[in-house]
Image 1 (cartoon, rainbow, N blue to C red):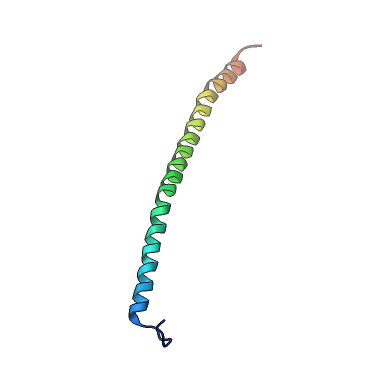
Image 2: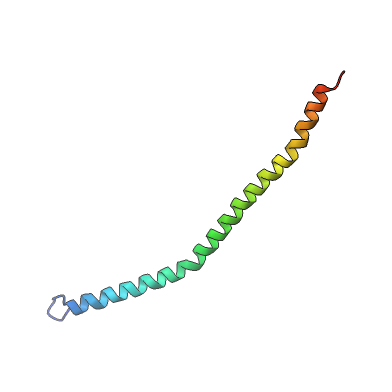
Length: 74
């Protein structure tokens, strides 16, 4: 505010400029951590898919053994 208590357009423009600068700095500060989280999320997703694939890979022969045991004469 000015000395007489009035808001001027210049003051509003300066404060708006400061807010925009701060917003830009905050955006820059969050870019790297956001990238790290996204990379970790992708790693966890691919690991989950890999574990499921391994589970199915080892489950297949077990199902085959069960069928062989059922078909074998006693």
